[in-house]
Length: 103
Image (cartoon, rainbow, N blue to C red):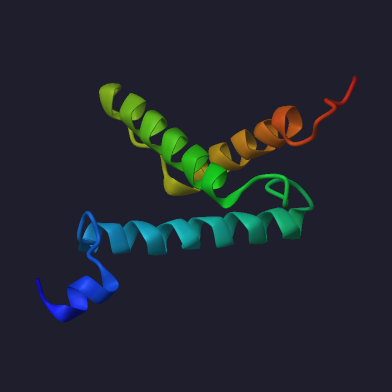
């Protein structure tokens, strides 16, 4: 084993180009939705973590795209992004504060 590997250790799994792409795209997704939320005065706010934004985005886009593909349809990106924003609002409504709002 080389001196540098002993000194700094080795990572369990080498990073790939896909890992780098997912990291960059995740940051871009979070930044975009946070900017939209700030402009519109809605979710996502600081109550929603960056990881949760990426998780909701990934789940909604993949699920809706898969359903559209099965039906032989295409959902434009603008509509998918609007759907994601609605789900982010719902997430904060129900999970954003320790005390749910009463209506």
